[in-house]
Amino acid sequence: MNTYEAMFILQPVGTEEEQKQLTGEMDDLIRKIQGTVDRNQYIGRRKLAYEINHRKEGYYYLARFKAPSVAIKDLERSLQLHERVIRFMVVTAENAPLEELTLASETAEASSERDS
Image (cartoon, rainbow, N blue to C red; front, side, top):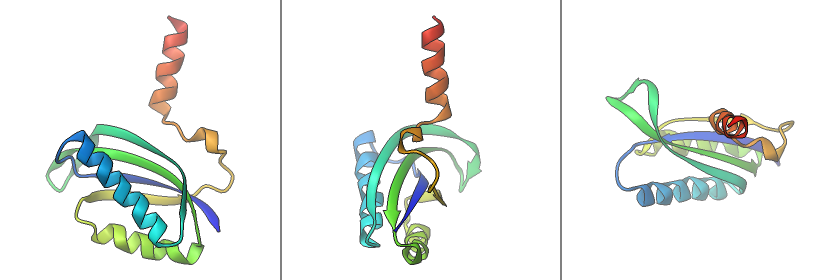
């Protein structure tokens, strides 16, 4: 089994609790392909760099998981058909340590707090 990271941008509809339920659905899709979620991070609502399907915002969700390489195509197919997924990207994360699953913006915020 290989290690992968996936970034999901989900439609910004419903409450934040409903969005967290939707991230649970993303984890379920990973488990459906015999994958195991090692770590996940709900990032929250963010402005998109450009408009996608008449939407200017989306809920971001990042997950690191292990899965068989032959099953990734099935996962991508399921994500393409999921009506609440705006965009997604799945990449291999073999050499990246698990601790590096943080956003650059969080790192910048932490360093600015230390400087204060």
